[in-house]
Length: 380
Image (cartoon, rainbow, N blue to C red):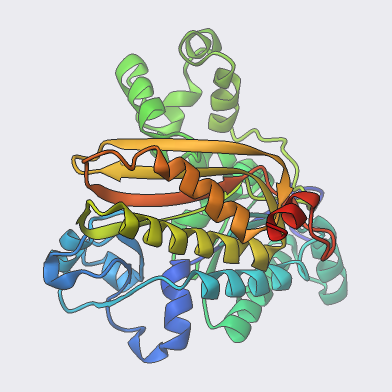
């Protein structure tokens, strides 16, 4: 009789997360640099550059570098690192191929972002267990090994896998043994696994929520959160209180949903020097918009909402958005609407530090036909 893990495969969730995805994509083209610190982001310009680190490999992380860090600070910590500009077309292509591979292993697969996905693998594990006469944990390790091998051999990148009977615990588990890790949390171990972790490890607990938990309830660990009475949490967080309480207990009934669409696609760039010439600002904005449009085309999406973000010297930031009368797949419309929103600032004497473009209210393009709105734009 097989050893029981109280699992029985009825609900087994894999969370698969690519390790330092953007950096790994670049290093797949430059394998000779894998043993050196490597950074994807803005041009550091010998420590005088603007912008931030988009991603870095684990060797760079050991030197103190991290995503979101000013590129000038990264240069201070690792002037000998290799710095490259991001290639979003490459990342989208590799992501698409990785997700195709993952769908071969899951009963259901839910893509959550460009570099992570949930897999419901209960039925697949039953087959592996029966075919190979394996115990539950052996079947899980066998499937995880197959996934890792497939991604590594096909795309030359690594991934980490978290396994649990809920999505949120699987996601938390993924971060425990990066890179190229595997963390299995058995149903009977969930509360014990979560208890010592910092409450900030819960996906969705950001700085504001963490501050309230710390200052109002003196909560630092998930175990601390689990012990707070529901009424107390409800007074502070309203409808979110139940979710927080359930997460602390490892309760999450959300299903793996096959059809997933991104909420939005966006891109932005920081000027090397604050720019006061709005003709140049528009040129850069158009380049950013074209990058966004390229990603729309790659993933076959129509958009309906268009927005821009503009940041001035001193970090004063403004956003503007416009909802179209119908979904569109036209670059001309995207550029036109962005220019209209940017023109609001043409009379300003303030210099621009950053410009960004965002599209949302997306839906899949079902065929190659243009929308009526696109025909009208093309006919002008």
